[in-house]
Image (cartoon, rainbow, N blue to C red; front, top):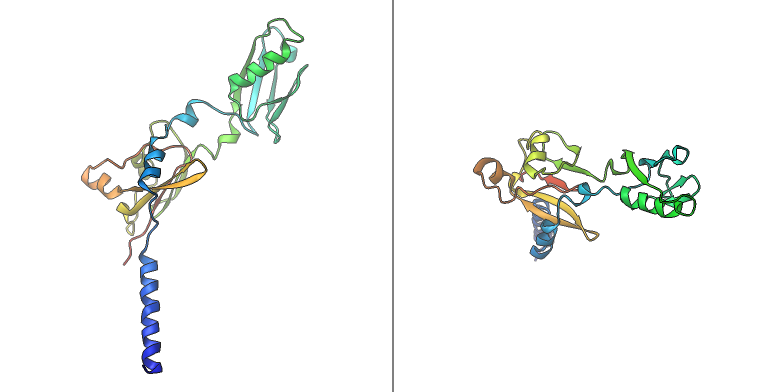
Length: 214
């Protein structure tokens, strides 16, 4: 084979590889992983609020106003409570924090009644959001609401743009420390009324819509 023919053949091979690579979209996770990701209760992280750094809590001790405070949770996850000292707050639900403070106060007060109210939810500003990226009118990041579906967040983003490959959309959900890719057929949802893939959104979900290959 001549050098010219060899060079032309090599060039064609490179072009073919580039074409295939360019057309290949993100691959879906295994059916088993997808099934487990979709089985996760989408309400878990909004039904029970878990405290974190920068949250502000008001601790009220009944009939002991001098022990009642309103403080932010420090970066180390703790708050300082009169008489008790430092108490771990991050990673606990408000009622769990109240119980821990109540137990510590029993050394000083008979049958203390403690309540904890979250007055600022700074730690969940980003973890409880859902996002849409890719070929949409406007990429968005909005707070999750109970009952929100894929269609809801797509409409919030203004729908797909003129280049969107709607039936190649992918929902990315974190499960057990791993990101699971779930195929979503948006065109079927919008134009055919086939809503099988109109899944409920979970806090932290990301919906990505690729562009069509021309």
